[in-house]
Length: 470
Image: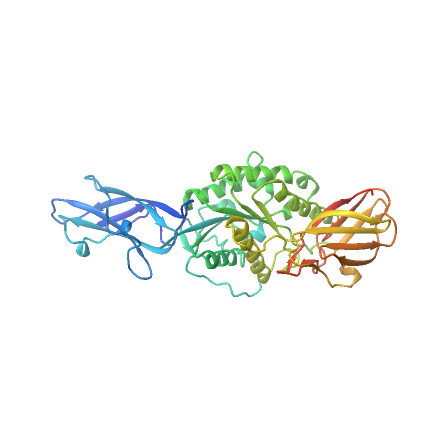
């Protein structure tokens, strides 16, 4: 973004950095900031030299000797440029400039532009549909914080604040929301990362409510993918740490859902190409629930189908991860409430800490490993990722979190028990007839109480699996 100035004196910064900008660190934990602009003065002089330095915003000392007053390439045509190299992970920093005439002492050089509140850390791109954009309506304590910044739709970096989808002055109209957004998971996500890692976090919100996967898929539609690239190109030169993705509600229909695996796999590959990172981490959220249609409508099988794909894809593509949101509340018929968003942000941050940054934290959700027939009317559901034990207490039959179906329809459940800490045993009222399946968190609106790991209270991932013949 070009900076425009009406102060035609001294040093003008025209490109390279903005107030509040976060720069993506490289593998060495540093960033390079390429600055350029103009210089001018009405004062008589023999020599003119643009100087630049980098200081800590909160204590006014230089970041390092390398970043003390440094001579920029200063040209007779009134332009200048300088790349600040090895800017260390951290901040917030301030860039100061000045014009040194005839070798004057630096404390009295001619004024220059400044860039405030910049940092070096990690940038995460927010993608998906409305639950990524954020429509939590319930009150929640989740305010702004220095070191949590965002690239706003108006083309400028700002202190991050809800709603992240604010479209005031938008330069990227393809993902402009039709209604005002509200609370999303991502400020909580960034806050946890910053507090655990100790460096700033930048967010680039590129999601759009109601968007199908086709709108993100190059070669199909792809308009939101290209819009995202405009965002990240302008905001951070397409240098990012990772992507968060919450989407799928719009693809539960019979035509779209059968293409979901293929399209999402292509999307991940395209992200990794354009962001020049073959191992770019992608953190996804499995669908929560939808309460807008009765169980008799054809909507519900599609939600089960998409949840199962969202569970399978991380097994198939390294560097793709999934969290469960099945235990969280809603603000309306389909959007997570604000407290649920806080939990989603916390769980996604745990994935980033554990899987991306190698921290020793628990982040994997209980996940069906296999279905086993242990008797004529008995199924054992064996779960992976149990740190302590699988836990479930709800004895109300209507709240049972699994559905067993066969060629005769729904199979009634007689009783259940948790054995060996990781196995959910189901006793059936009758023997299975022909081909059978078992679904965890069935329908678009499954029970809100589902089995979870007692360590960390992480709920299981929804699933649909075939029951073996024997």
